[in-house]
Image (tube, rainbow, N blue to C red; front, side, top):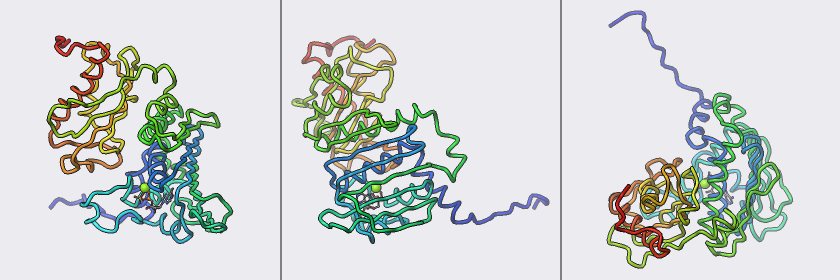
Length: 350
Ligand code: ADP
Ligand code: MG
């Protein structure tokens, strides 16, 4: 035993524990936006509007016309580990139909910001509630006049976690992340009218009319929309994926960033590197190095062959048969390009 190296092991106070845990869920404004938009979609909203100030660092406001919450429900919702979406681990094993289910987002967001929730259940006039939570403490719960649905306003993110706040990037970078998140959910939900605005200026607004092409037009504009080619998996080779459908851009419509590769597994927006890389591979030499196409690609797979819990916040997934997935996606995208006379499948690899 050496002397003089006595380490004092202390139990952290609960406020500190809470902020550390919150940091696991809330990394930056875009992670708040992701959680709030998922909740709005889970609440069966037809319209979701997202307004952020200064890249979301100063303020985030998400409004939906979904089912809303009663006073009791909203008080419960900001507590730890509260969810209306599952009740046991068995529910999880049966497969979850909602985007959220961990019951930690609202609690975590409330712990590291000043958050105001205004909400009223559908069909219940005069039963709105406004709840304010500041740094984890509920400081007000009042009746409020408001439309049916929910508005959540998150101000001063990380005001009580200076180390985190300092770590945030320029507002333009933070806004780029917010834009990627909202865009991805808008593209996957063409039947929901999604709007995004930054410092009072509208970035995009989708119509909610249920058409993927129209949604791409609203989000990315005419030039990109006109260059999109349909991926239709008529002759998908055998493999783990049951289908691969969506839109990819003509190779001349490309960007120096992977941010425009939106990939979904069983309707869920995920970062599936196997899928993203296979899309790019399909273009072969048609793309210059470090240039990437636009893609909105939906893969359907037997849930038993994909692990979605690699890291919930990072939205990564892992396939049991990664190679099989790559082969199928590359084939589907290549067939789409080929149908436009763009890529010869026998082209030598560059
Ligand atoms: P989770 O989504 O994992 O259940 P959250 O912390 O994100 O956990 O939300 C907690 C609960 O609050 C949800 O289960 C839901 O019942 C309710 N809730 C949150 N946001 C909304 C919303 N926009 N509309 C209606 N209910 C909501
Ligand atoms: Mg949630």
